[in-house]
Amino acid sequence: MITLEALTKDYGATRAVNNLSVNITAGKVTGFLGPNGAGKSTTMRMILGLDAPTGGQSLVNGVPYAKLRYPLHTVGAHILGTAGNPGHTPRTFLKALAQSNQIPVRRVAEVLAEVGLQSVATKRIGGFSLGTRQRLGIAAALLGDPQILILDEPMNGLDAEGISWVRQLMRTRADAGGTIFVSSHLMSEVQQVADHLILIGRGELITEATTQELIQEFTQQLITVRTPRAAALAGLLTQRGAKVSTSGEGHLEVIGMPVERVGALAFAGGIELHELSIIHGSLENAYNQLTHDTVDYSAELTGGVRTK
Amino acid sequence: MSKLMISESMDGRFAGSLLAAARAESTKFFGLRTLAGLYASGILVTIALGWLLGASAKASGDNGFDTVMPAPLLVFATLQFGQLFFAAAAALHITNEYSSGTIATTLQSVPRRAILLTAKALFLAIAGLLTGMVMILLATIPTALSAEKYGVFDLSDLLSAAVGAGVYLALLSVMVLGLGLVTRNSAGAIVSAIILLVGLPQILQLIPIHWVQTLTQFLPTNAATFMATGASEPYGPGMALLVLIAWSVVLLGAGWMSLKRRDA
Image 1 (cartoon, rainbow over the protein chains, first blue to last red):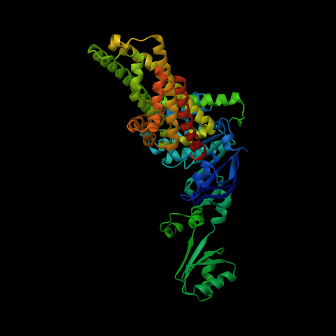
Image 2 (image 1 turned 90 degrees about the horizontal axis):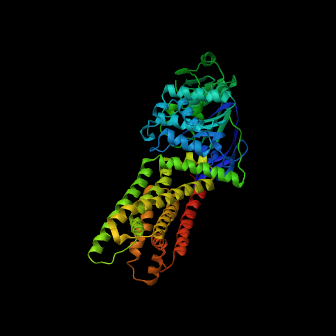
Image 3 (image 1 turned 90 degrees about the vertical axis):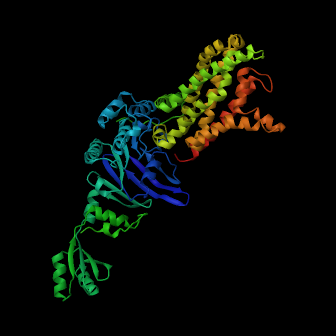
């Protein structure tokens, strides 16, 4: 169990994480989602005691991380871009970690086999691809057979086989009672495996719910209508209980009414339509909409928000 | 899946964690070709320079100059140069962790900064101590052979040079560890170490002001010489050891503030 209590981090005048309070509980895969720069890595670094919070605190099984004597037995973590010194071999890198936490050195060969890196155990890490380094970072996280796993964008650089392997690994360990906290900036990477989702943007909690709840909430049908008499049609539809919003001149978005009924009401009211179409909501869309306002480095985003 | 382990401030547990962390530091150090290579080069260069200096002492002596100096102290004199290999290794041992990002993994495995700092300093000090002593013993043989009668020495010369070199390399490594923790940058740490060990003694001795000259005598390289040669002027070996310890405490203390106060 990981507990964040009003966790806050400032870098100079920039607030990277603002008053974040959540519990990450055992037996589940918890997805930690947000755009680049949302504060995911910073939050994870504070949990691991690498960066000191400006305010609030984070606890691992009720104590600050730095109070764990041999923490690798309790928490395994892979922070992006930190898997080993380029001049070391995987064996040396893992052996040093094992020694520092009184882990039997035979675990080194075991985790290397578990992540499929036996064949490069004595090669220098500097020559590895991003995917291979990710596997090595995950091997380091598994070394102490910890109950809690914290993985920062573990699927970056992995091929399809690697991604499905990471998902399987997280699922298996969560089902065995583990606490799995995995960050990603892509909903598609985690929605299949995460039981619970925490969405953040600009360091603040946007929403937190089970994956199932988020899907139900956001996958209702959205109907878009183009008409020269938008106001009249909006009034008509609202009267019949639909939720209507305007997304531009002569352009309505309707939720909570079947498309046939929207067409029939427009016909009965003698309102001319130029377009009447259904957009199938997805969690991906919902996530994009939710984080749209919080993206720091926003390019032209409208194309990405709606997929017809 | 193992149970939660919480630290207690019991001495035995601190020592256990410290030894575990120091063992890990040793594995990391010798697992890097660069660092092991710097140590090996430092030893080879010292042996070669000792032999050269011995040959030069013999040549001068044969030509009538009074150049008799015990062979172990001739070897010690070459440390003016050879020390840089060990200083670079100590600097890279910590700055490598910052440049590769592995400091994050290191602090995850040893989250208590005091244990990590002590483990690094302890490992480097032991490596420096053993290397310094063994190196003097090894290099004395070719030096004594090449210097012949101009390098005669007794056991006390050998012991004071060996212990002096060992203690100096141990404390030097701790000083440079401090510089590395403050700069967190390989070039910065190595350049500042060279300035401290070679640059300042050279530059300051050119300034003919009394207090500058006095100050120069307290630089680490000069203190090391007074310690190993058993000098009585301007101060003796005991005082020299204190001067070296003071440098180590100040620079490692600065490194500690950086490790403790700044984010990894």
